[in-house]
Length: 327
Image (tube, rainbow, N blue to C red; front, side, top):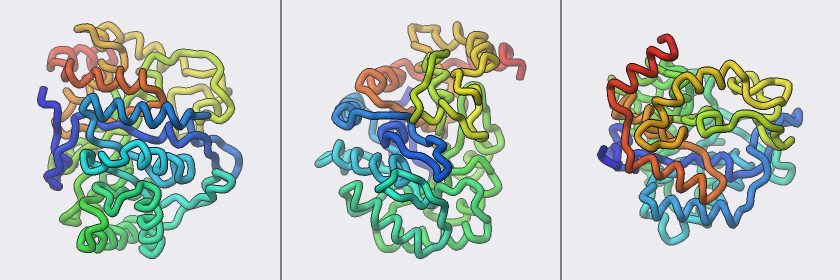
């Protein structure tokens, strides 16, 4: 396979695999104490993992200002250092947070806040521009989103942003942003267990990149099965929007594990690990997909990046997976 993909109508080339930087933000929580991070992190290991990914050809990194309430952006900026211009850098805005208590305190969908948030992200990332700036309020009002789209066009004119997008699973909302000439992507959930045909059709029709969050189903497609999760891990107390994990904190939902077991042999064919097979499915699903699996260690970075050389699944393998999952 070609190892690069084009980020929608922006024309920017990115590695076919991006890296999502939510997990390296470390612990943070909602105002009610609900964890929304992935537990404790080792910042030095995070830096080593980012740099290892760079060495293995990964050139697209996606973060958000709210991940670790600014910490993910700071660590990513530190890791990239002088290699900033070698990568396409994506971040998000819209969530309001208190970095002192590592708490998310709400959302702000005003154009004024978007500018303040962008200024703060640029400082934390140690850069003068963001390549892809994404609205992080998935259910924002479409009329207000149209205002924010126009604000993003201002950022493009000012040289602060090269392209923008919306992180939402609603294709009708994504279409509102896509009316702007410099909208390049929609970030949405997509993995072998959770297809998104309507959003992929929108990307095809409007020349957008499909940036895939949860490509490994929050670790389930990387082999996580059971065991106790640490208290600061979002999967230990999964919110309503996070399927696949038991609400009592006991770990993976057995129904999801059964579906993974049904397709395991196809995904792990041709010498792939389970995670590599899940990424290979995404590349086969559409030429517009750019999966962004999370990582916390050098080993995870190496395994994910190792999927690139193995390429996408075949048409026959994708059809077999559909058959096994009954769709």
